[in-house]
Image (cartoon, rainbow, N blue to C red):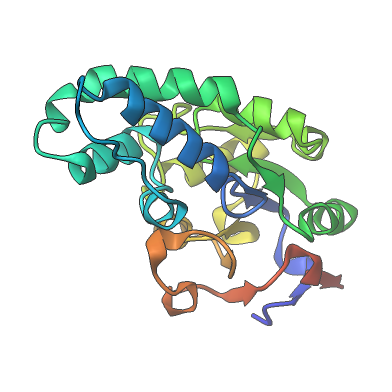
Length: 230
């Protein structure tokens, strides 16, 4: 697959990841994580604020995984407070969702190209569904998608193939003709297991690992590079 030129007849639909693919939400994650840590901090305990690089390596597998990773990083006593921490994190994230995030350059152009090519579009993210809907609406992206599914929409999250297979069912398309567009090995592993072709952007998070080392069908530096020909 040419990373920038996709043959229209190969696809009927596309599933597009949200965080790290369409919207740079790292600032939201950092703010919510550090607000959580500040609230959990015991009196007299030193500040444990995490920087964007550290948090960026932890995102991508859902809120539960992020909170567990943050607690493990914060210290031995923190993992015992997981239930409290998750509730705290979700409350802080809901309060700032979208405030510290921006649509990636080329994101709108890429969605328009997919739409103009006649593909059915779904947003498929590990972010909780309510927060995904809110973020898409705040950033003016909600009108592109006929379906939106979050990390709590199905029994399992990416990199499990179940969300992709269920999204294909909702779109009424075969996995082999449904393109997955994401930013990480989560998206690629899920796509491979589901039998979907996968295209990755090079600017996302991918747990701090080089994305071009991931098994994918193509890579783009911007979604504006997408071109479709019959």
